Structure formats: C-alpha cells, structure tokens
Length: 542
Image (tube, rainbow, N blue to C red; front, side, top):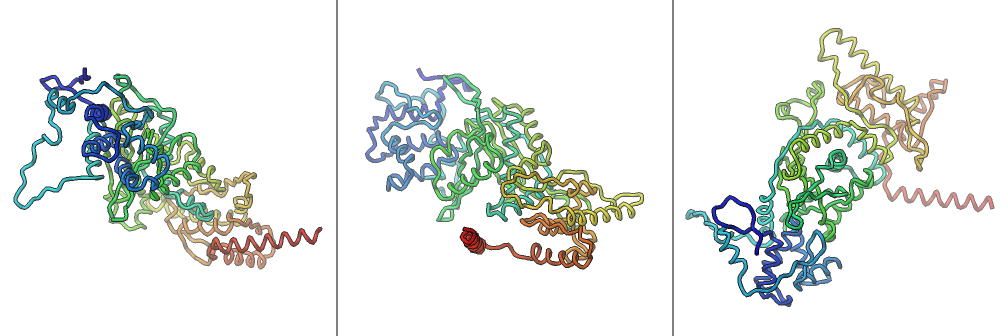
C-alpha cells in the first residue's frame, strides 16, 4: 500500500515525495540501463537531481550535459556519479544509498497516483486566458528546474523574523582589516565575510537554529547536526550573459577561526566561478546566507529549501530613508549610522519564533562588537592594534550648557592622541614576523581620550600633522598609523634637540606616509638582493 498523508480534501489522497516518485517511475517504466536518454528518463533524472541538489540543480544539470558530450570534461567524482545515475543506480544526496527497489508492475503508477489522489498535475491545471497580444513560451531547461525548486520550497512551512542593525562599527573595523590584508596581499574582507562569521557564532550560541526537519522511517524527525555547514549563495554570470545561483557550503565552519573561515569562503567562491565545485560542496548544508543587498534590495524573504534549518538574508547597507537627503557633514554631526536589515526565514516545524528572534539579537550584539567579536577577528588575522569599539555618541556642539569648553576639551584630546602616537606608536609597529611579542598600548586607543567612532568624520585642528592644519579624525588616524605602526618602529621623542626631532618627523612623513606601496615584483627583487648580500657576508666570515 502506498502511504497516505493527512490532508484537508474530502476523498482519500496519496502524496509522494520526489524521491518516491523517482523510484516508482524508474521501476515501473521498464527503463533499461541507459544507452541514450529517452524522453521518460530525462524527466526522471531531472526530478532526481532537483530532489537531491535543490537550488544547485541547474548547475548539476549543466555538468550532466557536459558529461554526456565528453565524460572527461567533468571532475572524476562527477564522472562516477553521472555514470551511476545514467545506469539507473543513482545515490541520493544525503546518505549515499541507492534508490529503494520494489517488485516491478505493469502499470503507469503516476497515473494511478493521480487517479487516487484527485490532485491535478501541472499539465492538468487550468490554463490562464490569454489576450490577443500575449503569446506563451514554455519554460525549459535550467529555468524549468528553478520553477520546480520554487514549487517544492512551498511545501516547507516557514516564518520570518527581521532586525535592523547599525553597521557603523562593522564598516570602520572592516576598513582597518582591509588595510592590513592588502598590505600582505591577502585580498579584502567583504561585509558578507564578517556577517557570515557572526551567523556562525550566533548559531553556536543558539544551536536550535542549526536543526533541520526530515521524515526518517516514516516519522517526522529533528535533524540535529554536529557541525555548522553554512551555504553561501553565489551569483554566477555565464558566457551568454545569463545568470545562475549556486549554493555550495563551507563545512565545519564552527570549528574554524576567522582566518581559516576567510580562506575557506574565498576558496569556495573561486571554485564556483571557475566551475570546479564537487558533489560534496553541495551536500549537507544546514543553514544558508544570501545577500540580495548587493543589488539594492533593502529586505528579503527568501525561499527555504527542504532539509535546511534557516536561510539568512542581508539587505542593502545604507542610511535610513529619512536621512538620505542630508550631507555627509550633517550626518556626522548628528551621529547617524548606516543600517542593514537582516531576516531569518526558518522551518517553523523545528524552530520557534522566539529562537529566531534571540538568534538575531545575538547576531546584532556581535556586529556592534559585544562578546569580543572584533578583538577575536583582529587576533586571528594578526592585526597588532585593537579594533574600534561601539560607544554612545557625545557631541558637545549639539548639546546645551557650556558646549564651547567641552568642544575645546575634545580638541585638546585629539592633540594628545597625536602626541601619544609620536611617543609610543612604535609599541604597535609590525616588526615581529612570528608575533611572539604581545602588542598593547591602551593610551593609543580613542576611548582613552574620550573619543569614539562617531568622531571619525568630524574635523579637528591637527597642530601641523603632515602639513595639514585641519583634518577629520579618520584622516589623522590614517596618517599616524602609516607613520608609526607599520613595518618600521620609530622612537625619537626622547631626543632633546628640537632641530633633530623636526628632521626625523619630516623623514617619517616622506618615507612612510607619502610613499606608494611597493609592487610585488619590486619586493621580490629587493629580497633577491638581500639574499645575495647575506650569502656574500657569510662567505667572507668563512
């Protein structure tokens, strides 16, 4: 007997999963081992790929077409997989077991199922009335797979939570991280890198957000995972200009530090764009991240694929709409931050609204720097100086009382910060390649002088720093870090002669602030010369 499902219709009905339909069609259609794809088997294989690869079905069908044209044009793992698939013994995505077998029957089972369930198939659904100026063009190929995926996702009962998060601290610390990485040739950290890492840490705090739903032995079950395998939605542009979406995953992301995750994330994207993803890259996704904000979408409610716990969507990073007509100077004076809307669409059968809400709250806390979120990232990337911190804005120019003296005090604190870098900036210099020596200088942090991230775009008198009379606090910090916290440590303020100190300060400006970074080729040439000199010196000693 075929399993019956509880439903609201008046007659007895039968509902089958795509995997069950595949097994039945394979067994009852009298399909012999594939020597060439028949019309029936093409539909069977498409349904099987759709069931097992979800949002990545388009990509897999493209690989299958390449395999059929030239088996050696795909990776060995794909060759083995497609060989089994085309010979009628496919292995489902999740457990690697072959499709279930049943005694053969001489009947069109799909027609029997339709007759018993009274549920119309797509071909039996009523067609819309078309006007004279409207023509219909069937959706085929990969686009048809997307249609099927979206219809399948409707079987997952979902709910969505959303939260607006200020990104001022995220934006400022990302800028510092990228300055560090680019100086070492390691590329750039995107907002998505950091948000994905915050999701992983939030899932560790609320492991229920990593639980999926599935029917095991005919029983509804919670699928509890030992690892966080985060799926990354990657938009791929093909040679013909069309686009497709791939969702490979980074496995065991919760077992990594940020530096390891950064490298794994980039490797995943690189292989996706070069067409080198393997079967394993699509298997076992527990939670996904998609970023429609890159095209300006403010908020999104994405579809959740069967088996996954939740999909997190990030919107565009921009100022709230009511402030978007203001100048940058006015926004800085008011302390207005850009924001991002983050949504959590989850499987409501195993995750409750309170759990999703608490998860987003924890994500919010991480992105504004709580729980040592940014210090851990800076430590993993071996950045010597501490990250910026979240703080409440205090701008004397907007307050009552003796605001002029308070503003003068803040100005004096900026001059003290500049002097502190000239005196103690060498303590944060990157002169230890093994990072054996801890770097700490609390009196070089903004908070030590009553300054915050909200002051970064406000202008202050510099006292002649780098020949500039006034500059934003951001520009002041940029000059000071280039001059004193780079690859050379400079300590000269103990010198008594004013002329000597001025001479050194001018050389610092010329050598470390105004110079363009050396190219990789020039660095290699310099290294070769240094090795030659070292070898010659060793020869002379012998």
